Image (cartoon, rainbow, N blue to C red; front, side, top):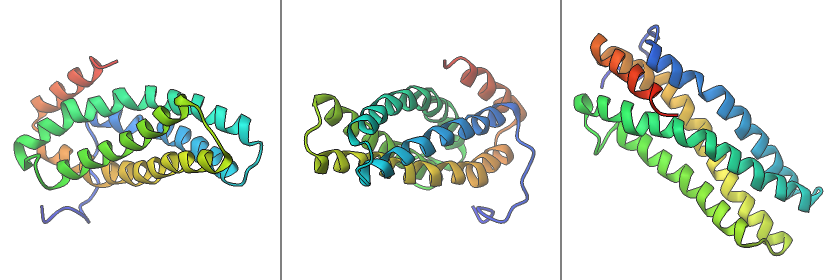
Length: 170
């Protein structure tokens, strides 16, 4: 683990490239969500923006879930063979996934019950802001640390298996 930072970036194999390529569209959606939360915070067109936030969070979750499954169900266990999963980078990545999903889930379950006051709407929007901050930093860690680490760690056969397995997840 001494090479955790400062290692030259390796060319990523196809499976890792695919995982990395899924980040920009997700980040684009996150930026939109964050913008809506800012407008809600400033009470700009509150009702419409809050309803739009609910719709867009559902769409974001639908895009995020298969991406998370590709990492949690395939990449993390493959890396875990080499570095373990109960502590270290994999444990951190899974914790961040859990935290982001918990914030998104808390927002959706409360918002679908019905939103009350302006203060309540602002409080609910904070869940999405939290998910935004967690995931933007999380994606950066994956791209700059975890994916290059996986590239160095996995065998050529494992890289082929990674690609095959992540492509099976729709």
